[in-house]
Amino acid sequence: TGEAISEEDLHLYQAELETQNEELQTAQSKLEESRQRYVDIFDLAPVGYVEINRDGIIQKINLQACELLGVQRQYLQLGKSPLVGLLAGESHPDFFRILQQARARQTHEQVEVLTPTRGPAARILRVFVACGGERNQSGTCLLCLVDVTARRQAEQALADQSERLAGQNQDLRRFNQA
Image (tube, rainbow, N blue to C red; front, side):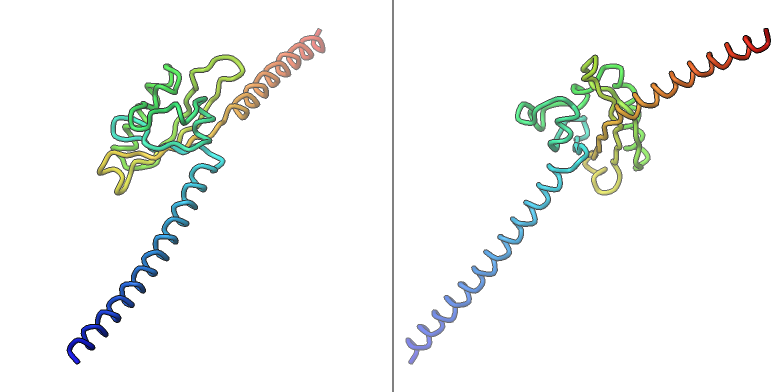
């Protein structure tokens, strides 16, 4: 009977292990589905997302951020490419200032930067920076990039039109006074 109990115990252990294995496989499958949802949300977002380390090196970047910065993700060396290398030189001081403020204050900051491309392909990006909380221990910052080029162009066109109309009004006043 000692053998029968031992054999019975082995069957029970085997059944228990099989049940645990099935539970682990189910958990692994749910974890993979969750990870894929995160990847889809991150990569397919309508705004650009970038994660940089303490030195400003890109750790993660989504497809929209690549589009806005004019770079293909497969050509970026994640963990080696500095974000400022994708910004126009005249934007560097403002970007570094805001980054420093976000880290020091652990608040959200924002700044507008230019892409290095000139002419009609140039873009003006509003960059929202968050460096607070647990991420601040490692120096990691999250950035959200939004293209505000069309808005800035519309504002400039409106300002130009307003200036023209003011000049025409002044001309009409002079004409009426004459």
